[in-house]
Image (tube, rainbow, N blue to C red; front, side):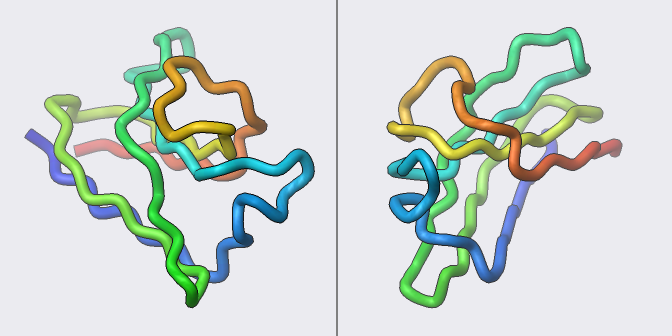
Length: 88
């Protein structure tokens, strides 16, 4: 298993985005052709810092963060704001 400890600083409050969102959702996909899977939402605090800690069985994957109306959405609808390729 691969532990993910994702941290972000100086994040805009998702409610102040255009269009407004309720959260930043983190998606994982094995490759560009794979269907993204919602692995959780970044919790943004009063200092505009966000964090998500989770575990995945994937060893090589892409993380993508999108603003969404709900942290429970099953497919990304918001624009891809941040992404990273992870290989272990």
